[in-house]
Length: 356
Ligand SMILES: [Zn+2]
Image (cartoon, rainbow, N blue to C red; front, side, top):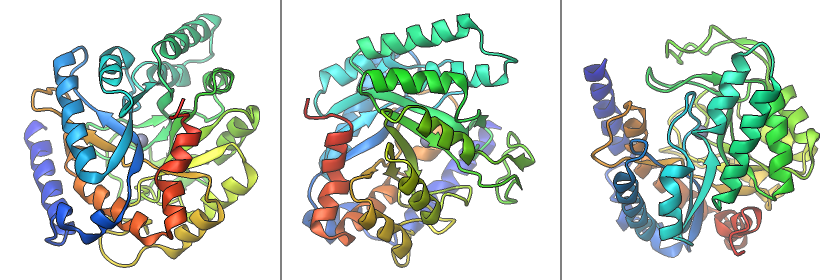
Protein backbone atom coordinates (compact mmCIF):
# COMPACT_ATOMS: atom_id res chain seq x y z
CA UNK A 1 0.00 0.00 0.00
CA UNK A 2 2.72 2.41 1.06
CA UNK A 3 4.84 1.51 -1.98
CA UNK A 4 1.86 1.74 -4.27
CA UNK A 5 0.92 5.21 -3.07
CA UNK A 6 4.52 6.42 -3.37
CA UNK A 7 4.50 5.28 -6.97
CA UNK A 8 1.21 7.13 -7.37
CA UNK A 9 2.88 10.32 -6.07
CA UNK A 10 5.65 9.94 -8.65
CA UNK A 11 3.17 9.45 -11.48
CA UNK A 12 1.17 12.49 -10.39
CA UNK A 13 4.29 14.64 -10.01
CA UNK A 14 5.41 13.63 -13.48
CA UNK A 15 1.97 14.52 -14.81
CA UNK A 16 2.14 17.87 -13.04
CA UNK A 17 5.48 18.68 -14.69
CA UNK A 18 4.13 17.62 -18.09
CA UNK A 19 1.11 19.84 -17.62
CA UNK A 20 3.35 22.82 -17.01
CA UNK A 21 4.42 22.42 -20.61
CA UNK A 22 8.06 23.09 -19.83
CA UNK A 23 7.49 26.68 -18.68
CA UNK A 24 8.99 27.74 -15.41
CA UNK A 25 6.32 29.18 -13.14
CA UNK A 26 8.27 32.25 -12.23
CA UNK A 27 9.16 33.16 -15.79
CA UNK A 28 5.51 33.19 -16.82
CA UNK A 29 5.12 36.67 -18.26
CA UNK A 30 1.61 36.99 -16.89
CA UNK A 31 2.84 36.58 -13.33
CA UNK A 32 4.51 39.97 -13.43
CA UNK A 33 1.58 41.71 -15.10
CA UNK A 34 -0.88 40.48 -12.50
CA UNK A 35 -1.43 42.19 -9.16
CA UNK A 36 -1.67 40.70 -5.73
CA UNK A 37 -4.40 38.27 -4.79
CA UNK A 38 -5.79 36.49 -1.72
CA UNK A 39 -5.94 32.70 -1.41
CA UNK A 40 -8.89 31.69 0.80
CA UNK A 41 -8.33 27.92 0.80
CA UNK A 42 -4.93 26.72 1.91
CA UNK A 43 -3.85 23.67 3.94
CA UNK A 44 -0.76 23.41 6.12
CA UNK A 45 -0.45 19.73 6.97
CA UNK A 46 1.78 18.28 9.70
CA UNK A 47 1.40 15.76 12.50
CA UNK A 48 -1.04 16.81 15.19
CA UNK A 49 0.75 18.75 17.92
CA UNK A 50 4.04 19.05 15.99
CA UNK A 51 4.07 22.82 16.25
CA UNK A 52 7.58 23.10 14.85
CA UNK A 53 6.49 21.37 11.64
CA UNK A 54 3.46 23.64 11.36
CA UNK A 55 5.80 26.61 11.67
CA UNK A 56 8.03 25.13 8.96
CA UNK A 57 4.93 24.64 6.76
CA UNK A 58 3.97 28.29 7.37
CA UNK A 59 7.41 29.41 6.19
CA UNK A 60 7.13 27.24 3.08
CA UNK A 61 3.73 28.85 2.46
CA UNK A 62 5.15 32.36 2.90
CA UNK A 63 7.79 31.63 0.24
CA UNK A 64 5.05 30.50 -2.16
CA UNK A 65 3.06 33.63 -1.32
CA UNK A 66 6.03 35.88 -2.12
CA UNK A 67 6.68 34.07 -5.40
CA UNK A 68 3.01 34.15 -6.44
CA UNK A 69 2.01 37.67 -5.28
CA UNK A 70 -0.39 36.29 -2.67
CA UNK A 71 -1.10 38.90 -0.02
CA UNK A 72 -3.02 36.73 2.46
CA UNK A 73 -3.87 33.04 2.82
CA UNK A 74 -6.68 31.47 4.82
CA UNK A 75 -5.43 28.23 6.37
CA UNK A 76 -7.62 25.44 7.67
CA UNK A 77 -7.57 21.74 8.33
CA UNK A 78 -8.89 19.61 5.46
CA UNK A 79 -12.32 18.12 6.24
CA UNK A 80 -11.32 15.15 8.35
CA UNK A 81 -13.51 12.07 8.83
CA UNK A 82 -11.93 11.48 12.26
CA UNK A 83 -10.66 13.90 14.89
CA UNK A 84 -7.28 15.34 13.82
CA UNK A 85 -5.35 18.57 14.21
CA UNK A 86 -7.42 21.73 14.24
CA UNK A 87 -6.99 25.24 15.66
CA UNK A 88 -4.73 24.10 18.51
CA UNK A 89 -2.05 23.26 15.91
CA UNK A 90 -2.35 26.31 13.65
CA UNK A 91 -3.41 29.06 16.04
CA UNK A 92 0.17 30.00 16.95
CA UNK A 93 1.15 30.19 13.28
CA UNK A 94 -1.87 32.39 12.44
CA UNK A 95 -1.00 34.76 15.30
CA UNK A 96 2.74 34.84 14.53
CA UNK A 97 2.30 35.55 10.82
CA UNK A 98 -0.81 37.76 11.00
CA UNK A 99 -2.12 39.46 8.94
CA UNK A 100 -0.64 37.43 6.08
CA UNK A 101 -1.97 34.17 7.50
CA UNK A 102 -5.57 33.93 8.69
CA UNK A 103 -7.14 30.85 10.28
CA UNK A 104 -10.42 28.98 9.97
CA UNK A 105 -11.38 26.26 12.42
CA UNK A 106 -13.45 23.10 12.45
CA UNK A 107 -12.03 20.88 9.69
CA UNK A 108 -10.33 18.62 12.22
CA UNK A 109 -12.87 18.98 15.05
CA UNK A 110 -16.40 20.00 14.00
CA UNK A 111 -16.26 18.09 10.73
CA UNK A 112 -15.44 14.73 12.39
CA UNK A 113 -18.37 15.29 14.81
CA UNK A 114 -20.61 16.02 11.85
CA UNK A 115 -19.51 12.89 9.97
CA UNK A 116 -19.99 10.72 13.06
CA UNK A 117 -23.42 12.23 13.66
CA UNK A 118 -24.24 11.50 10.02
CA UNK A 119 -23.96 7.80 10.80
CA UNK A 120 -25.78 8.00 14.15
CA UNK A 121 -29.51 7.18 14.37
CA UNK A 122 -30.24 10.55 15.93
CA UNK A 123 -28.55 13.75 17.02
CA UNK A 124 -28.63 13.81 20.81
CA UNK A 125 -28.58 16.89 23.01
CA UNK A 126 -25.11 15.84 24.15
CA UNK A 127 -23.84 15.84 20.54
CA UNK A 128 -25.29 19.30 19.96
CA UNK A 129 -23.76 20.58 23.18
CA UNK A 130 -20.25 19.26 22.33
CA UNK A 131 -20.54 20.65 18.80
CA UNK A 132 -21.57 24.07 20.04
CA UNK A 133 -18.84 24.18 22.71
CA UNK A 134 -16.21 23.33 20.09
CA UNK A 135 -17.55 26.06 17.80
CA UNK A 136 -17.32 28.54 20.68
CA UNK A 137 -13.69 27.56 21.29
CA UNK A 138 -12.96 28.17 17.60
CA UNK A 139 -14.56 31.61 17.79
CA UNK A 140 -12.58 32.46 20.95
CA UNK A 141 -9.33 31.41 19.24
CA UNK A 142 -9.63 34.26 16.74
CA UNK A 143 -10.63 32.11 13.73
CA UNK A 144 -12.27 34.16 10.96
CA UNK A 145 -14.59 31.37 9.85
CA UNK A 146 -15.41 27.67 9.91
CA UNK A 147 -13.80 25.15 7.58
CA UNK A 148 -13.14 23.02 5.84
CA UNK A 149 -16.50 21.40 6.41
CA UNK A 150 -17.70 18.60 4.09
CA UNK A 151 -21.24 17.60 3.24
CA UNK A 152 -20.16 15.45 0.28
CA UNK A 153 -16.48 14.75 -0.26
CA UNK A 154 -15.54 12.18 -2.86
CA UNK A 155 -12.48 10.07 -2.17
CA UNK A 156 -9.80 10.22 -4.87
CA UNK A 157 -7.33 7.68 -3.49
CA UNK A 158 -7.32 4.97 -0.84
CA UNK A 159 -5.90 7.36 1.78
CA UNK A 160 -8.38 10.14 0.95
CA UNK A 161 -11.65 9.89 2.88
CA UNK A 162 -15.17 9.56 1.50
CA UNK A 163 -17.60 11.71 3.50
CA UNK A 164 -21.31 12.20 3.04
CA UNK A 165 -23.97 13.82 5.22
CA UNK A 166 -27.07 15.73 4.13
CA UNK A 167 -26.20 19.43 3.76
CA UNK A 168 -29.25 20.20 5.91
CA UNK A 169 -28.08 17.89 8.70
CA UNK A 170 -29.16 19.31 12.10
CA UNK A 171 -25.52 19.99 13.09
CA UNK A 172 -24.91 21.93 9.87
CA UNK A 173 -28.04 23.99 10.49
CA UNK A 174 -26.72 24.63 14.00
CA UNK A 175 -23.34 25.68 12.59
CA UNK A 176 -25.10 27.97 10.10
CA UNK A 177 -26.80 29.80 12.98
CA UNK A 178 -23.59 30.08 15.03
CA UNK A 179 -21.70 31.34 11.95
CA UNK A 180 -24.38 33.93 11.18
CA UNK A 181 -24.45 35.22 14.78
CA UNK A 182 -20.68 35.73 14.69
CA UNK A 183 -20.43 37.01 11.12
CA UNK A 184 -18.10 34.14 10.12
CA UNK A 185 -18.28 32.39 6.72
CA UNK A 186 -18.43 28.61 6.35
CA UNK A 187 -16.04 27.02 3.83
CA UNK A 188 -18.00 24.07 2.46
CA UNK A 189 -16.72 21.15 0.42
CA UNK A 190 -19.72 19.87 -1.49
CA UNK A 191 -19.40 17.58 -4.51
CA UNK A 192 -22.83 18.11 -6.05
CA UNK A 193 -25.06 15.31 -7.34
CA UNK A 194 -28.13 16.52 -9.24
CA UNK A 195 -29.89 13.10 -9.41
CA UNK A 196 -29.32 9.63 -8.04
CA UNK A 197 -26.60 8.23 -10.33
CA UNK A 198 -24.21 5.33 -10.50
CA UNK A 199 -20.78 6.49 -9.54
CA UNK A 200 -18.70 7.63 -12.53
CA UNK A 201 -16.54 4.71 -13.69
CA UNK A 202 -13.29 6.70 -13.46
CA UNK A 203 -13.71 7.18 -9.69
CA UNK A 204 -12.30 3.94 -8.43
CA UNK A 205 -11.41 4.53 -4.78
CA UNK A 206 -12.74 1.56 -2.79
CA UNK A 207 -14.44 3.84 -0.23
CA UNK A 208 -16.90 5.32 -2.72
CA UNK A 209 -20.42 3.81 -2.80
CA UNK A 210 -21.83 2.37 -6.04
CA UNK A 211 -24.57 4.99 -6.22
CA UNK A 212 -24.42 8.71 -5.47
CA UNK A 213 -27.65 10.13 -4.03
CA UNK A 214 -29.10 13.47 -5.11
CA UNK A 215 -27.87 16.08 -2.63
CA UNK A 216 -28.56 19.57 -3.98
CA UNK A 217 -31.97 19.87 -2.27
CA UNK A 218 -30.21 19.59 1.09
CA UNK A 219 -27.81 22.41 0.22
CA UNK A 220 -30.71 24.62 -0.86
CA UNK A 221 -32.37 24.01 2.51
CA UNK A 222 -29.12 24.84 4.34
CA UNK A 223 -28.82 28.10 2.40
CA UNK A 224 -32.48 28.99 3.06
CA UNK A 225 -32.28 28.04 6.75
CA UNK A 226 -30.51 31.28 7.71
CA UNK A 227 -30.02 33.93 5.03
CA UNK A 228 -27.47 35.70 7.24
CA UNK A 229 -25.11 32.72 6.92
CA UNK A 230 -22.38 33.16 4.33
CA UNK A 231 -21.61 29.85 2.65
CA UNK A 232 -18.47 29.71 0.49
CA UNK A 233 -18.77 26.62 -1.70
CA UNK A 234 -15.21 25.49 -2.40
CA UNK A 235 -13.47 24.23 -5.56
CA UNK A 236 -15.61 25.83 -8.30
CA UNK A 237 -14.11 25.17 -11.71
CA UNK A 238 -12.08 22.09 -10.77
CA UNK A 239 -14.52 19.25 -10.25
CA UNK A 240 -13.33 15.64 -9.92
CA UNK A 241 -16.84 14.16 -10.15
CA UNK A 242 -18.45 15.90 -13.13
CA UNK A 243 -21.65 17.64 -11.98
CA UNK A 244 -20.23 20.96 -10.65
CA UNK A 245 -21.02 22.85 -13.84
CA UNK A 246 -21.17 26.60 -14.58
CA UNK A 247 -24.88 26.12 -15.28
CA UNK A 248 -25.46 24.72 -11.78
CA UNK A 249 -23.36 27.50 -10.21
CA UNK A 250 -25.39 30.14 -12.06
CA UNK A 251 -28.73 28.65 -11.00
CA UNK A 252 -27.63 28.42 -7.37
CA UNK A 253 -26.29 32.01 -7.34
CA UNK A 254 -29.58 33.25 -8.79
CA UNK A 255 -31.58 31.51 -6.09
CA UNK A 256 -29.34 32.10 -3.04
CA UNK A 257 -27.94 35.55 -2.24
CA UNK A 258 -25.90 34.14 0.69
CA UNK A 259 -23.95 31.73 -1.54
CA UNK A 260 -20.39 32.42 -2.73
CA UNK A 261 -17.83 30.30 -4.57
CA UNK A 262 -14.10 29.87 -4.18
CA UNK A 263 -12.39 28.99 -7.44
CA UNK A 264 -9.91 26.14 -7.91
CA UNK A 265 -9.60 26.61 -11.64
CA UNK A 266 -7.41 23.80 -12.95
CA UNK A 267 -7.99 20.09 -13.19
CA UNK A 268 -7.19 17.61 -15.94
CA UNK A 269 -10.78 16.36 -16.29
CA UNK A 270 -14.46 17.42 -16.52
CA UNK A 271 -14.23 20.74 -18.40
CA UNK A 272 -12.40 22.78 -15.76
CA UNK A 273 -12.49 26.59 -15.69
CA UNK A 274 -8.82 26.68 -16.79
CA UNK A 275 -7.65 23.44 -18.43
CA UNK A 276 -3.94 22.59 -18.18
CA UNK A 277 -3.82 23.18 -21.93
CA UNK A 278 -6.27 24.84 -24.26
CA UNK A 279 -8.72 27.71 -23.93
CA UNK A 280 -10.28 28.99 -20.73
CA UNK A 281 -13.90 27.88 -20.26
CA UNK A 282 -16.14 30.70 -21.58
CA UNK A 283 -19.24 29.53 -19.77
CA UNK A 284 -17.52 29.81 -16.39
CA UNK A 285 -16.15 33.26 -17.26
CA UNK A 286 -19.67 34.41 -18.14
CA UNK A 287 -20.85 33.38 -14.64
CA UNK A 288 -17.94 35.29 -13.07
CA UNK A 289 -18.89 38.40 -15.06
CA UNK A 290 -22.59 38.13 -14.18
CA UNK A 291 -21.95 37.48 -10.46
CA UNK A 292 -18.81 39.55 -9.97
CA UNK A 293 -19.23 39.99 -6.21
CA UNK A 294 -19.65 36.29 -5.48
CA UNK A 295 -16.31 34.66 -6.40
CA UNK A 296 -12.98 34.39 -4.59
CA UNK A 297 -9.87 32.28 -5.25
CA UNK A 298 -9.01 29.20 -3.19
CA UNK A 299 -6.10 27.24 -4.62
CA UNK A 300 -6.53 24.24 -2.27
CA UNK A 301 -2.75 24.17 -1.90
CA UNK A 302 -1.33 21.58 0.49
CA UNK A 303 2.01 22.35 2.13
CA UNK A 304 3.60 19.33 3.76
CA UNK A 305 6.94 19.54 5.60
CA UNK A 306 9.41 16.67 5.39
CA UNK A 307 8.80 15.38 8.89
CA UNK A 308 5.13 14.59 8.31
CA UNK A 309 4.34 10.91 8.90
CA UNK A 310 0.59 10.66 8.13
CA UNK A 311 -1.27 9.29 5.08
CA UNK A 312 0.06 10.04 1.61
CA UNK A 313 -2.90 11.98 0.18
CA UNK A 314 -1.65 15.45 1.31
CA UNK A 315 1.73 14.83 -0.38
CA UNK A 316 -0.03 13.81 -3.59
CA UNK A 317 -2.02 17.06 -3.47
CA UNK A 318 1.09 19.10 -2.60
CA UNK A 319 2.65 17.93 -5.86
CA UNK A 320 -0.18 19.60 -7.82
CA UNK A 321 0.24 23.10 -6.39
CA UNK A 322 2.34 24.49 -9.24
CA UNK A 323 -0.21 23.52 -11.86
CA UNK A 324 -2.99 25.14 -9.84
CA UNK A 325 -0.99 28.37 -9.33
CA UNK A 326 -0.36 28.58 -13.05
CA UNK A 327 -4.11 28.16 -13.70
CA UNK A 328 -4.88 30.97 -11.23
CA UNK A 329 -2.36 33.29 -12.92
CA UNK A 330 -3.87 32.49 -16.31
CA UNK A 331 -7.38 33.15 -15.00
CA UNK A 332 -6.53 36.50 -13.36
CA UNK A 333 -4.63 37.63 -16.46
CA UNK A 334 -7.54 36.68 -18.67
CA UNK A 335 -10.16 38.68 -16.74
CA UNK A 336 -10.70 42.41 -17.30
CA UNK A 337 -8.71 44.37 -14.69
CA UNK A 338 -11.69 45.42 -12.57
CA UNK A 339 -13.08 41.89 -12.44
CA UNK A 340 -9.61 40.47 -11.68
CA UNK A 341 -9.37 42.83 -8.70
CA UNK A 342 -12.78 41.76 -7.40
CA UNK A 343 -12.17 38.03 -7.77
CA UNK A 344 -8.51 38.32 -6.85
CA UNK A 345 -8.86 40.18 -3.54
CA UNK A 346 -11.68 42.72 -3.12
CA UNK A 347 -14.41 40.11 -2.65
CA UNK A 348 -12.24 38.15 -0.22
CA UNK A 349 -11.52 41.26 1.87
CA UNK A 350 -15.24 41.94 2.18
CA UNK A 351 -16.55 38.37 2.64
CA UNK A 352 -13.77 37.32 5.05
CA UNK A 353 -13.64 40.71 6.87
CA UNK A 354 -9.89 40.84 6.34
CA UNK A 355 -9.53 44.54 6.98
CA UNK A 356 -11.02 44.41 10.45
ZN1 LIG B 1 -12.00 20.46 -0.24
